[in-house]
Image 1 (cartoon, one colour):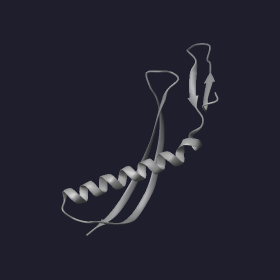
Image 2: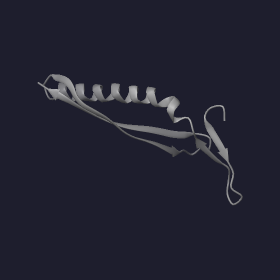
Image 3: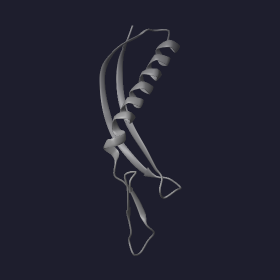
Length: 87
């Protein structure tokens, strides 16, 4: 529970672990997604023999939290969309 995972129990099933601390990891996840988007855009520009221009538009999509094969481990994912100009 100190790591932001809530433990709940239903009498008909196994214990459930619910991730509750998204706001703590959200800024670093958005930062990483933004860096990766720019690297991908730069690679596309290089492969296309064009120059990557300025960022024109950006949006944060949704976060998803999924179970893994371990009940105490969750997979958290963010989707971002970045639009760059090319020259």
